[in-house]
Image (cartoon, rainbow, N blue to C red):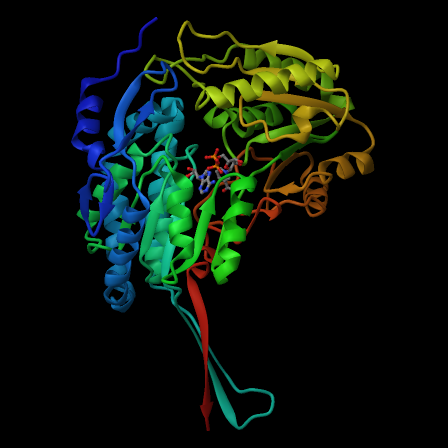
Length: 491
Ligand code: NAD
């Protein structure tokens, strides 16, 4: 089977000139040593483009540009910053079609997921255009009297942003928008699997009126060279990272040397609880979103399904019927709902996890069909596990596998739910009062109550325990990029 990529999308990618993908002070350039790296279509394994692989020298040049632009940007009025962000929102939606196509191509995600991501990503520009002008502070009489306290929030300084491949647009805009709203300048490194979307975002920001040097970007295959350079540079005041817990921990150790502020959005292992009094059809619909959106390659993806024994049979039958019918393939084939995994390593890792689960007695209940393509496809499947120690429950799956554990003892189920070191998202279906009461006991930064989706630009996104530190989105998102300063005023 062959996949036909629209010629307009191919032209869009050529127009991005990926071989000059280092973006510094508003200009595109090649890497300082002229090297590039290939970006692949995970549905076919064919090369899409070669992108410049930035060096330590490029990383330093990006900080030079961010430093030169900082004072001017921090001094612009909040209204001016708001107008620019609002323009970026409009421009992003105007380019929704090529942007969705680009993400579907380099990431492999289904076209409906890619379109949804463009809207979600653009909304961060709109939300932070609105937050940019809501500056607040405090003025108080201290208990002892005699003086006055004034509290203000100012831009933290140059922000280093590092993003993953699973949401190539949204993970970038969720950081860039609040940083710019706060008055910070940024240097960005996105994942080497999906650098093309970010090249398009740079052009949108320039067209929206972001001054040269305010946003700089260094794609690179040598991630550590870039992050080490930035974390060793005394001009960088915050590292904002989204990715795996292992890399987040490494970056925090490097940040500790200079006490660099660290905002960490890390791995997940979300529980999805179905109670005895749940609407089973709604819970199945919620599972399809929480588990299979983005092919399961989401930090918020439902990773452990705890289903009450009284509804388990009906839930399993209904979920299996839906999963069997999922259409898997390239995003450029009509009707495809699930794409490939991002690369060979991810596919091999999941094959191993499935072998481990099988040896532990897990049973495959249903599985979808695979397309006749070379890419990194894994059939979406429903698996019943024997107990909470299953490898599928103990690891972040990051793929289209829905493992189910049937429960009857609520206390034990809650212990199991909270037994992980991760605490990003959770979902619960059932009577509202029971669901809310139980949700309060779950160790997670976000809980979907009778909903399979928690992401919302207006909400504080983030996790507890090893899932991260800090929040992105909502009102909290700007605070990550601000420093609090107080004046003690003689009276
Ligand atoms: P990753 O940690 O491998 O990579 C993330 C980024 O770090 C990429 O830009 C990568 O190039 C870079 N990187 C990798 N190794 C590095 C190193 N040694 N030094 C410096 N930078 C390095 O993660 P991933 O595979 O791209 O993404 C999947 C993970 O991200 C999952 O664990 C997922 O849960 C997590 N994630 C979390 C959120 C969230 O908001 N909490 C969102 C999306 C993804």
